[in-house]
Image 1: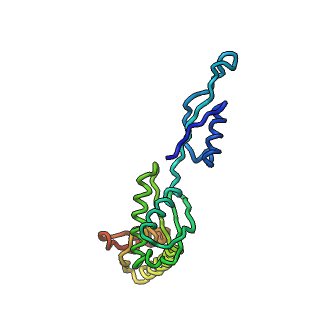
Image 2: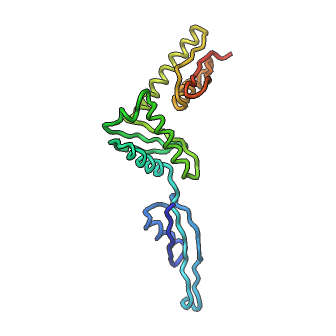
Length: 207
């Protein structure tokens, strides 16, 4: 983490000078007071300023963007990072560009792999653990809406036929979407079965 030491007539002044130089707010830093100010003899002779060390926190969204740029640059892909947002411990990143079909891959497999690698890179340097959701031109958002609709449709079939439905193999993120979409249905229960990468969601009637 980037840090610097700053002097001031008071601790508050030293902190403010450091924040201005770093261009950040109080919530973005960790502060250590190295020396309290002293007035010295007659308030002049031997007086000492306050000395503080101000250290930038690793903000998850900034770390994620930095690591993603480094990763995509090695892949020689033309891209633009459209948005990076963090909410409820999840960093969501959406990117655009002309090579996005290559990045998505077959059924999102390449995108899932890049997301997994990015998550490991980000969490390696953070003090807190976050989940990374990497999207390409809202591909995941559209896919999630499609999965939610499919999950509801299949749950209605289960209610009609009284028979469980086993969905096709999906990654952890897509399985989570299905579980979440149906968790409020009092008649339906969902669970995963099988081993990766062939793990599937089963939709059944509650007993």
